[in-house]
Length: 283
Image 1: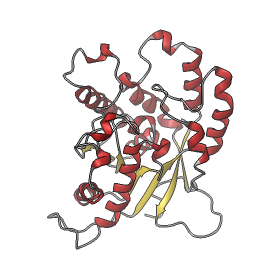
Image 2: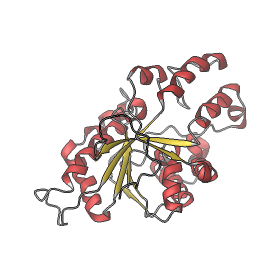
Image 3: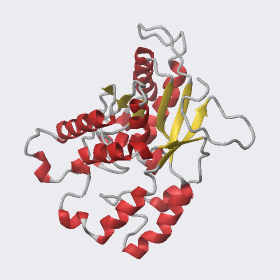
Image 4: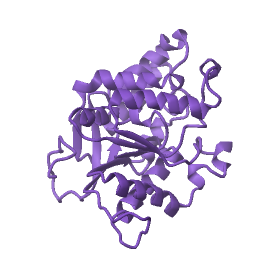
């Protein structure tokens, strides 16, 4: 089970890992906290859809099929947008949800689906998006709640066996911070909407890497799943062919061969150990 925040998080982040385990026969479920209502979408994509949410759910359905997911489950919160945006104040925004309520919804799905391994964002949400951080916090609490008899939701207690956080290799990020200005790009204004501050992420420090998953054999699937989220990619050929976009593509390619995870539970043993190559190791 992967617990994430928005449609496209599953493809742009840990898509290789999800596709790989689905290919190996695991039942891979995605829990998506919101429907991406606050996403910036070029007008041309909206002609067949009544709302941004409808469009992005359709894109997620496409990506889920490509990745081979067994199911997609929504928590029914609303996309909160980036810090300081009006979407933060919407009453259904994920960042306004009571933490125990959000955790309870995730815990209920853990009991229902009974995953052995749970994946989510790292404590800073990858790039400090407030919804990513909220999804992380809800998942960590849910991992505990699901096994407690005192949490009553009509289902028997169930304790998943492993919990991992998806992490970005900080060495690659430091390289990007150094090289992006050479392409005319500002590392504090990275991404399609220029709302990702890579320098701030680097300054947050590193998370340990306890598992490295080789995703090369599913690279084509991962790329095809990302392409399903066309509204969140540059919309015109001019943008796609620009120097800045080529630099963005190069940066993203640095993370395509492997995906890295920190193991939160069970806690790693003290001392230097070789990273796991399989999230199901020991089960």
